Amino acid sequence: MTTENTTPTKALSQRQQQSNMTDMMRPLLPSSIDPDRFKAFALSLLRDKKLSNCSEKSKLTALADCAKLGLYPDRNLGHAWLVPFKTEVTLIVGYQGYIELARRSGVITTVETEIVFERDEFDVWTDAAGRHLKHRPGPTQFATDAERGIPVGVYCVAVTRTGCQIETMSWREVLNTRSRSPSWRSKPSQSPWTTDLAMMARKSVVRRARKYWPQSPELAALGDWDDRAEGLIVEPAEPTTVTPAVVTAADLMGDGALDSHDDVDTPTPANEDTKAEADDPVADQFEDENEDDPFGLAGAVFSVAASDKAVDNLVASYASSGDHDADAMKEIIKLGEVRKQQLKTK
Image (cartoon, rainbow, N blue to C red):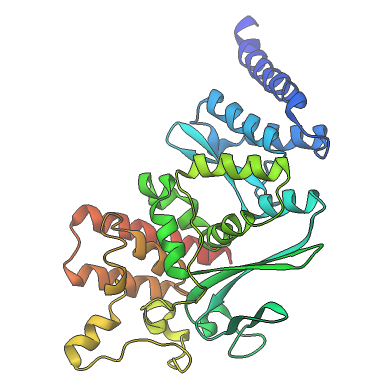
């Protein structure tokens, strides 16, 4: 009888210990966070099988950071969530976390962030009346992402009590931000830059924009914490332009891609040799930025492939180029499989 009761007793003891540990985080929570709701999210994560190989200490440390920042640890809300890296857990803050804290401050009423695609109608300008932005997804109102082409930039619009603040980033700047991310450098196939590229792109421009927002103590603390966690500082952009990446929509989108590039300033190949070079997914214009990040552009390319066939074509393209050794090809194949799994869940 004693042997039979040992396992359930231990399991119950562990669950009770986890409950007690989350209760100890209550003093860390700001008044805007419901303690019982936070505890429910925290206990769910502590018992998540995906995090079972991670140390209890790293999970509790990440949850304590989340409590101090005043964010709910829930992926569906998008404020923040826990991601396993080997035996440790990393707290990832989403762009919705920044927006939530900005709204709580009462100074910012609305924050919107969107990705701009190559066939969208997009413009940013300043006149005597102030700064303006126009974005119309194209080529039609209900066009799919594949019909809109490849991503070329991302923007954030924050409405305050006194006006409107607009910030933009080109897609090249987004990729450069990613190349400096510790999670991307250490394990690109498991990094949120691979699994949630669109979210991370929006977060990058929100992080840049928030430096010009009225700062509440909570928002300032989140920015400082995230800068240290990411190991990077996003510098203010030069006068804003959205620069298309030199990657053809046909390579990225497969059979569903449109052939028109009327509104995109892309190089025109002078002959067949330069045409083949321009059509290569690993575009020359990114070589300098990604020389220390061999899978940087590969991850971006796979992230916008719209079908399994498009993924397979890209893998074949990398294999036939002869530019990648066996280890590099293994990582590229992994990125392709990750994208196929993403497509299945859409």
